[in-house]
Length: 212
Image 1 (tube, rainbow, N blue to C red):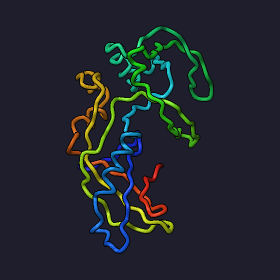
Image 2 (cartoon, one colour):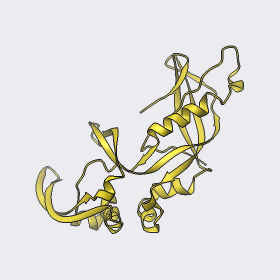
Image 3 (tube, rainbow, N blue to C red):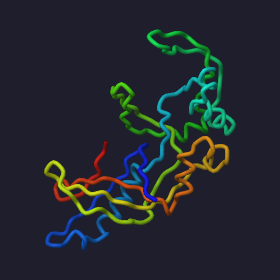
Image 4 (cartoon, rainbow, N blue to C red):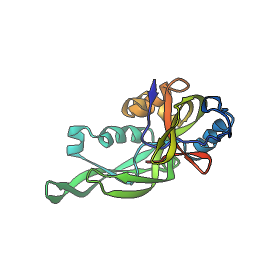
């Protein structure tokens, strides 16, 4: 089964050997480059950029992700809650509503990593985020294959498929956590078998990942 994980870009580099067919290209250049990239950028993060996180009664009624996940993280000692209020937009107006405010504990801060992420909102506006709450790190298991390269806007591109190993944070092994973080559960279950894919583009004789 092949899958694409949008929370991060998984990438690598493949060296082309002049005079050789694409089908004959060795794995030697691809494997160490993928390993290096995953070492630097293979964190599986959960899109919880800004803290504290407020959960309102309305959030609990419609069971938003934060409303479902925050109590579980608190039970594990990763966050602590307090009562507060914040502005919420409803229609064309804003109003102050009571919320349960969750903040990271010292234990939880260990999983909040510096990470540059461009977040695109529903209206198309972009915001740069500088950290994220993460659940573990991926590393390369095996290269499954790659597509024959094609020319796109004058440059060669190809998609590499590979399986992975996952060093999961200890808290993700708890059944409650895996229930409320289904993507993490899927990654754990797919270790060594599920294939991830990454698009590459040829630049200056080297294959580099295309970042959205």
